[in-house]
Structures are given as C-alpha cells and as structure tokens.
Length: 150
Ligand SMILES: [Zn+2]
Picture (spheres, rainbow, N blue to C red):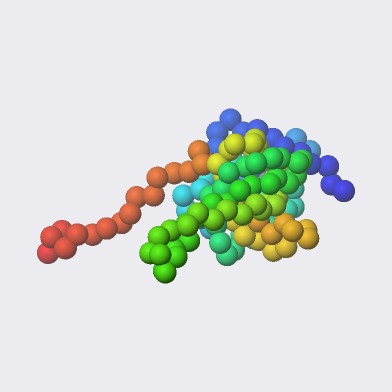
C-alpha cells in the first residue's frame, strides 16, 4: 500500500506539467480527454487517479449529484429524461451509481460533479470523478460564418 500524498498548488497546474511532491516524486498531469474540464488544484500520487495516475477515462461522461461520500468512493445520483414515444412525453429516470473519488478532488454531499467511465475498479464501481462543475472552462466554438469566408 503506497502512502497517499496530496499537495495543494498555488495555481492550477496545466496538463503536461510536471510537479514534484514533498517526497521527491515527480507527477505529470495528464490529459483526461475532455477539453472543458480543468485539472484539480491539488496533485496526488494515487495510481488510480485520472489526472495523476494511469487510469484512463473512456466511454460516457455524466453530470451527477453527490449523495454521500465514503472515503475513496461516493454514491451519486444520475438523472436524465427518457422519451416515451407512445405518449410523446419525457419521463424522468434516475439511477444511483457508485463512483471512485481520487484523493486530489474534494467532494461533499450535494456537489455537482462530472464522472467519466473507466475500467471496472470494484464489483459495482466503474466510474471516476473527474472534476466539479466549477473546474470547467468555457469552450469557444470555432464557427466560421459564410459571410466571413467570402
Ligand atoms: Zn490526483
């Protein structure tokens, strides 16, 4: 069992940067693959962290509400609308999910966080918290209008 070290940075590190932890270990901040989610302000040495370890995020990304936190894992509620073609209306559906919480991201009940799909980490855990709703940047769409092209 590796001792978990979390270092708080004065500024938010960028993906690709290398950070030295107090024990001399160098951690490289990875690209998770979702352009508008920024890396957390803290840096950890957890191998199963999507930002600082080698846990790959692939598949689906959801915005969910945290219900309860139990150490390294949390219970989140995912709500979505499902279209019912017979009645031509949407019905609300909700599902509770177990997710992994990396030590560099603080979550509390009631927070709105982004979770990404990963490989199965436990019997019921196959998603990981990537960041909170505040850890985002505005994506500027690159739209070239027809008048500008001429
Ligand atoms: Zn981390």
